Length: 391
Image (tube, rainbow, N blue to C red; front, side, top):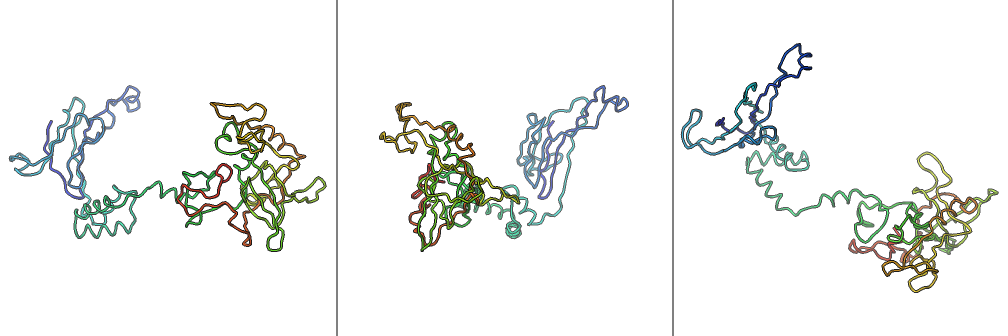
């Protein structure tokens, strides 16, 4: 069945639907008191809106519907020669099918602002009111040409990255630092954010030895926390390091309570971090805790390693000293995490540090050239930082 249908105008919508009458099942008939027919179903066939060509509507009959648009060569029953028409070829009706319905909707006079809003809604992530008003002014002056010029202007703009925009404003703290894929703004840039606590959950993993093979690829296990007393501006301060890198410099020493309840100052030396919470101090929400920062005292976790040259340096960067195991020609790494965790579970050696996870603080009198830092270089460069130990 072919029908010549004229296109509509701006602000108008024409829809062509096919009405099929569904036959009720036996159970439905019982509910409908024996009636055989259910409410007719309107199935979309085609549509035309805002003066555009007719389009096939996705659905049941899309493969059986054909549309050809163009200018009429001769006069017809409903048209004159030269008039722009669309010819719709639709499936023939079968027994039980009601027919085709052409429905007309008219939005009335469409304001320039409404046209601009509809246009921007289709082609952007979502327009601002100011953008709608500005484009609306252009549409009022230039009509459809304003929409064409807007598209041309957009395609000529320098492309921006939606992913980059999102990541810069996500601003989450990186769990680890690598030379590539650093999220958020660089240090000292606008919107940069830093943690205020000295140690992280990742530090515990590096200090006690990582699970499975992970430590062998992403970090050096059994990394120690160290305490070093210094004189700064006539007063004693305490440098707290993780590995070789300064995390904080405190005015007061780290202390713990002994079995008699007396405060004991943690002396200069190296310590294994057994547990830490990623907050400053001992408070989480409205609750105070006394176990926020735990270290081994009197023993440390060591890796059974020699370095590549064969010297026993305890850094965990070579193979086991007694076996020199190799895998694919390379010295094999091995970490005794279970032994370390057994030490961290020994209440006689684990000490709860008063005050919890210490805050990050670098006094003004300290020579900051000794501190690891992220410089004003390209993002792929990290200055003075061992990325396997520090983040």
